[in-house]
Length: 156
Image 1 (tube, rainbow, N blue to C red):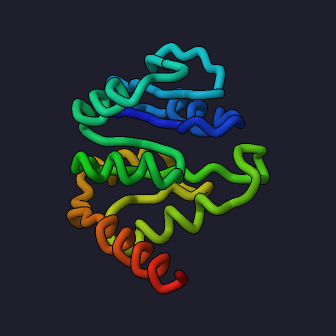
Image 2: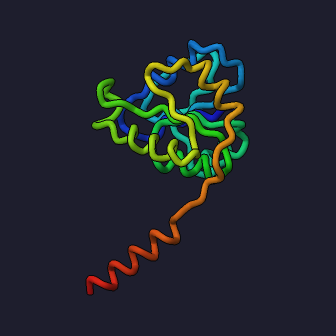
């Protein structure tokens, strides 16, 4: 099963769903669509799901296709999933700016994810994703929290 997450950004992300709808993918696909209204003949499209259900879909998924939001990427990696990120782009009205490109590139450079660019073929990227061996994700939350605490204490 492929779990697809578009996040909860208040702008639609129909471009990704059109790519998947018109692909040759035969896997079961479950989509958390958020603000994107979409009717599909091949995907189960859900508007919003709560965190426990979201995590359940992540656990069951063989791989994840998602927008370039840090929360979704980190959640998928925390479950040890293979992740293909399709960043939302400002020029299509999918976001206010293109920061998701930078986020996706940073995780790609560390070997955690694959990133789909506008010129890539979705079918080829899915084939690549299925054989992709991501680097084991290591969170730096503890280090970040300690640095933040140290900074707050030093500013007193």
